Image (cartoon, rainbow, N blue to C red; front, side):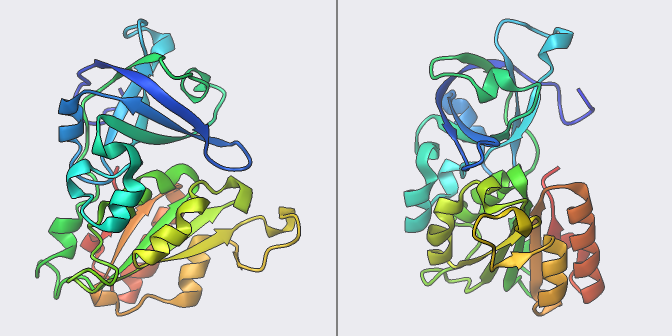
Amino acid sequence: FMGWGPDPEWSTATVSGNEVACPSGSCVTVTVTVSPDLIDEFAVPGQYVQLRQSGLGDSDDNKPLFLAIASPPAASSTTDEADAAAGPSSGTEIEFLIKKTDNNGWITSATPGTSVEISQVMGGGFPMEENFEGFKFDFPTQNVLLFATGSGIAPIRSVIESGLLGTGPDSSAGRTARLYYGASTPDDMPYAERFAQWESSGVEVVPVISRPEEVDGGWSGRAGYIQNALEEDGVPIPRNTGAVLCGVKGMCESVKDIMTQAGTFEGRVLTNF
């Protein structure tokens, strides 16, 4: 399907939770109980699975969803902050953040106990270890910029809560990290309740709102688009800065252009698809 990755190998999974993920109700957090083998396959933030309805097989009415895993890999959640935030990944559950559409009500409205079919874990995820560590590009990365729009925050959450960024007072890497997170309004921003936790783990969070005029009581924070916020702030020490991106195509292309023109190595600007 769509030429992405290998053919799926389907297994049965069970919805174990479904909660509204932001005040507007535009996204939901769906927790799914999966096999221990699938948990073991999930090793790198940014990896994804395919998900489809159970019992309908390969029919045209059962096209799968491609969903990045929002919870961190169990094996990498080593810091106290990650352990506290990781939630389901410590057992046989994984989380997804899903934006509601006209065609995915079967999963966004699914109740606990609903059976679904899930593929094996796919993709290489964000290749941070390969491109941020060591001397492949000059010195190891000292600054990481994270960019997400809308439900693209899902795999970025996995990165932050994995403990792999090397930020925070307990890290030997001593990196800095900043997240630019774009949404229409604060009510359309999943995981806002996790911002304080992310900040305590060494990730500065910069919400950027594209429709501040729609915010009740006004909006005093950053407005516009996250690529504009990056232009305003600049790229710190570009040769030693890396980026992790997930979101709309225009944002990803603009951020990549800004960073590479500033002097960041193209191989350190990472996406997961």
